[in-house]
Every structure is written in C-alpha cells, then in structure tokens.
Amino acid sequence: MGCLIIIEMHETDTHLWVPTEHTRRIWTQLKQFSNLDFWDISLVDGFNIPIDFVPVSGYSSAGAHCSADVNKNCPNELRTTGGCLNPCQVFKTDQYCCNSGNCGPTTYSQYFKNLCPQVYSYPKDDPTSTFTCPTGANYQVVFCP
Image 1 (cartoon, helix red, strand yellow):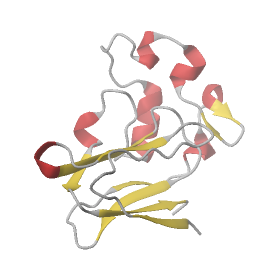
Image 2 (image 1 turned 30 degrees about the vertical axis):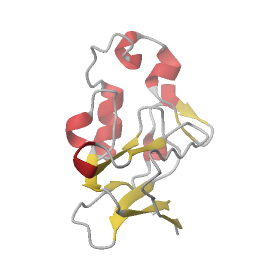
Image 3 (image 1 turned 120 degrees about the horizontal axis):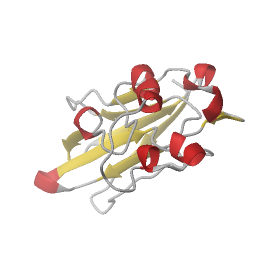
C-alpha cells in the first residue's frame, strides 16, 4: 500500500524537489511559459521506490507513473542497498553523465525506460517525459502505488 501525499501548489511556488536516499526526484516548474506547470519524474539519478505524480481536480493530463519494481532486476553493477544507482555514479564517464551535453540513451537508461516509460531515463529524455498542466492545478504524489 502506498503513502498518499496531496500537494497543493500555490502561485508563488516554483519548484518541488522530493529527494530520496538515491536522489531520484520529481522536478516541477510552476507558472512557467504560457501559464503552464511543467513536471517530470526522473530516474536519471537512480531509483529506490515506485511513485506516481498526477494532477487532480479535473485536469486532462494523465500524469507520470513509475509503479514497476525497478530494484528487482536492477543490473548487478548498479545494485545498491535499497535501490538501483544511476550509471553515472558507477562509471563516471561522459557516455552516462552527459557532461558534454551530447548524449543519448544507453542500455542502462533503456532498462529504466522499459519499466517506466513516462520517466526521465537519461538527461536528454524530454520528448516522452515532460508533462504540463495549466497553472493552478493541484497534484497528487503517491509513493509505492
């Protein structure tokens, strides 16, 4: 059973960051371009628990979900106590860290993406992983859905 948290965003709020032991995060920018909120769930920095982030109150966006057990089959080289590290933390190369800004998906990011198609799996994963809602929406965050 998940832990339900209702987050009410206010006009003055601009970011929500939910850090975890392995630094997986929810990233939001509220009241941005064209009065839209932008958000994503990121596995770029690793994974520890499943999560859902969805708008409430009648908004049409379906939200972002990652309810898969990523830890269960985490590649051995990324496995850590309580989670799955990101390959940048382990290998420290540009291929995985994207320091040059010129990177693409890897076999590790594809592992995350196959289990959680709506989340960021590498730094340039915008097309399938960034969501919007009109400014003023409320959001529901569920850990371990």
